Every structure is written in C-alpha cells, then in structure tokens.
Image (cartoon, rainbow, N blue to C red):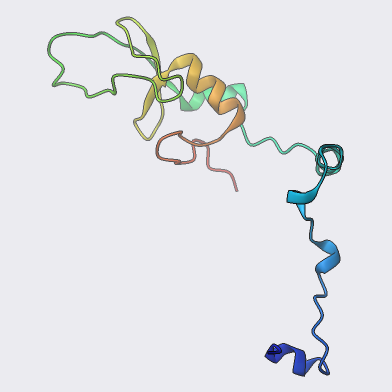
Length: 123
C-alpha cells in the first residue's frame, strides 16, 4: 500500500528531511560526545540574583501543634526528613525544600521539582 502523498509526488515516496534526522539510539559514545559539542550547552537554570528574588528562606520549627502550617515531612529533592531548625527554601508555588537543595536544583532547572511551575517566567 502506497501513501496518498506518494501519488502527489509522481509516485515516488521520498522523505525530504531524512538526512536531517539523527538516529541517536544507534550512535556510538564518541559520536554522542561530538554531537553534544556541536549542539552546545543550554543553560536553563537561574542566576544567583534570580534565586535570591524567588526563594523565601524560612527556619523550620517543629512543634506539637502541626495544624498551623502543613509542610511535607521530608525534602523531595534529597529525600531526607526535615529536622527542627532546618533552613528551608519556599518557592512562589508554596512548595518547600531544604534551602541548599533547592538552590542546587535551581542552578540546573527553572521549575519546581513537584508541580513543574516555572520559578522565573522568561519570554
């Protein structure tokens, strides 16, 4: 069975973009490294000043009255349980993490690890 598009091109079915596609699944390690060098690195993380403006630093005080503020029991980045007096970083979406964990995350990514909301909206 021939595709309908083949009739429009005089009976020849031709993929005009075949040469542009890369088969990364069948590339060697060296070829992938070379491709990475040609493509370059795209930085999607935040700068230090962007982090300062978008992370609210809070100190965690654990008390018996846990009904006031609901915070997860552990940091979703490092999976360590929170302890009293830990410094947390809270994003605009209200998700909280260890302060150092979220800073390291935001150096690489511009979104919340849980809800994927952008931290800094860029054009």
